[in-house]
Structure formats: structure tokens, C-alpha cells
Amino acid sequence: MYATADIFKGNRQGVLLFFIFGLSIYTTTMSLSFVLGFKFLIPVFQPFKELLVLTILGLGIYQMKEKIKLNMVDYLLGGYFFYTLLYVVIPLGDFGLSDRLSAFKSMSFFPLIYASGRLIAAEKVNLGKYFHYILIVAVAATGVLIYELISDQHFQTVTGYADYNFYYFGQEPTGNYGLTWTFETETGFRRFASFFSNPLEYAAATLLALAVIAALYTDDDNNLKISAFGQLALASSFIAIVAALSRAPLASYFAMIYVYAFITSKRNILKTFHYGFIAAVLYFIFLIQNEDIYSFVVDTITFQNASSVGHIIEWLAGIDAMIRQPLGLGLGSSGKVAGMLGLNVGGENQFIIIGVQAGIIALILYLLIHAYLMVYTYKWIKILKGNERKIAIMLFLFKIGSIVPLLTTNFENYSYVIYISWFLSGIFINSITAKSISNG
Image (cartoon, rainbow, N blue to C red):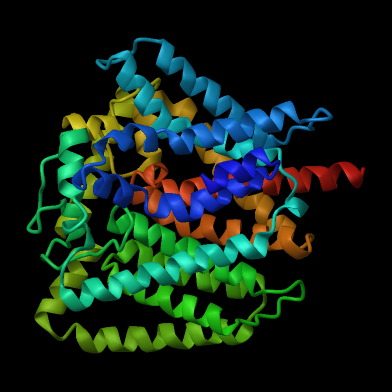
């Protein structure tokens, strides 16, 4: 309600307040509403984030005073959106219109989030405030995580997570803890999600927080000055990513730090990484003398552990489907909708999920969108100043950190990071397009 009031006062960027504080607790709010007897509120809550985006987009178009100059990213996102929209109309595959619409929203709503930010100038955004809000969420999430670790209990077991998922999505509780398999490793160790929807979204949110820390505390001369609160947020992010018990987010976390050191010429960080790598190799040589550790490492490298095997089987099934049907099997055949119905083909990889549903053309467009955004953000880090540069640093690092999760999860379903990152991507492209015009 606060964010909505802010928007109608003319502060469209105020929606970030809801994206940050509302979407981080979105599933927890739904679950608690269900178990506490406020089930009637859930149909109001569920479409609220999409309605807010459409409202901002509509207001932005209505208030537009001059025609905007389109960027290559605009063309690619528009092409992707309208191309995949055709698959809603065309009755391809075995799914009905409602399932196709649901799959389309899951797979292709992000261009509208981007477009809503595309009509907002960066200088109108109080970036420092919203970046600090993201860090507040990161610190609060780690506080809940510490409680989970001490009590050895998932927060979701007391919020009605399993009951909510079963009632609305028909998902039976799985795993050893009455939630889903995502909440544990293949060896049975608990994986915690704090107040996020699942451990993988929490890991993605942690990567976003790390990107924000790097951007917020780096000035235009690449000096890194982290405040006491920033240090607390950084420590919180490290605790969270270690407790995630997932190799992919942990690798992404350190890759982001390494890339940050490279683009800002932080030689001390680079040297630390290089020496740390050498030490890790020597320690690894010592550790593999233990037969159990040796087997674990070999199984991981050769993709023979249960988690890796599962990914590969899904990838191969998806690639096979794309080879057989280059134009796709139809919306709903992979990803969230198919997963709920137990008919999933080639999930656990965002690229394959798109390719299976809407074919090679949609996949190429999606890849180009990410490639162009990475190129633009990296290029403009060297040119921009102030808040605009901070957005560029944050987006570039987050894109780097997202590469592995995109390969191993249905990444576009993580509302918290998707809404924030695509909205800021729109603001960033608006900024560099305006500067390109002013520079002739």
C-alpha cells in the first residue's frame, strides 16, 4: 500500500520498495496467510506484483513527453516478448490456454519489468536508499538463517509452506523434512532458505546483495570504502552463501569477487585470490588422500554424484527435444507449469526451459539479451559516474554471478532478484541511451 501510494504520487521508482521488502517475503506471506485463516487475501496478493509493474508501465507511457530512442536491448526484448506471445495464441502442444498463459508469464514477463524501468531516468532514483534496503534484507535474512542453524529447523516448517504449496499447486511434500528436495543436499544435510521461497532463491538473493555491496561502496575512482553496516552485510552474505551448501552459488560468489577485482584493478584482491588458489590446490592434494573426500571430488568432477547426474539427464532430455522440435514443444512443456503436473521436459536450466517451450529462435534472443547487457554494462562502467556507474557495476557483477544459476535452475522464477535486476536494467539502458543521444 505504501509503494502504491508512492507510485500514484508520481514517484514510479517507489515500486522498488515493494520489490525489495515485499518480494523477499512473498512466499512466506502467502503461506502464513493460508495457515492463519486469511486465505481470502491470497487471490489479492498473488497478482499484485504484476499489476504494479503494469501500472508503472502504463503511467510511464502516459507521462511520456517525447518519443524514446530504442536500443538494441530494447529490440531484442521486444522481439522475445512478442515472439513468445505467439505461442500463447498458437495451440501448440498438449496444454490449454490457461496453462500456456501461466507458462508465458513465468517465462516472458521480465521484458515488461524492464520496460517499466526503461521509462525512468537514473537521476530520479535514490539509489543509495534502495541499495541499503537490499542490504537490510540480506542482514535480516541471515538473522533468520542463524536461528535456523541453531535450532536445526527450517523456517518454512512453521510458516505453512508445505500446506500452501499442496493446496494451491498440488505439490506433495517431498524429502526428509516435509518440504521439497530443494531444502536438502543429496547426503541429507539441511539447506536453509531463511524467509525466501527456497534455498536457491536465497542463494540468488545473496549474489544480488554482494553485487550491491561492490557497487554501493566503490567510488568513481575505484576506491572501495565499506562502512560498518556494509561490512555487516558482507559478512551476512558470506555466512548465507556458505550455509547454502550448493557448489554453484558458492563458485559464483567468488567469481563475482574476482571479476570485481579485475574491473576495478584491485591488485591486492587478485593476489589474494591467486595465492588462495595455490593454497587450495595444495590442500586439495593433501585431502584427496582420504578415500571419502577423493570419491566425492571425483564424482563431482565426473558428474557422477546424484545432483550432477540429475542436471545432466534433464539437460540431455531438453536438448533432444530441441533437436526434434526446433520450433518448440509449446508453452508449458518445460519449467514451472510442467513441473507442477509432473510432465517436465528438460528443466533445471533456464536456457533449455525456454528452448524446449518456444524453440531455438526464442533461445537465441534470450542469449543475445544477456550478452548485450553484459557488454553494455562492462563498457559503460568505464564511462559513467555516480549512481549510473553504480547501477552498471551492480548489473554487470550480478550477470556474472547469474551464469551458473541460469544453467542449473529455472532462474526467471526467482521473483525477488528478477524484478529488481530487470527493473534496474531498464533504468540503466535509459541512462546510456540518453547519454548516447546527448553525445551525438
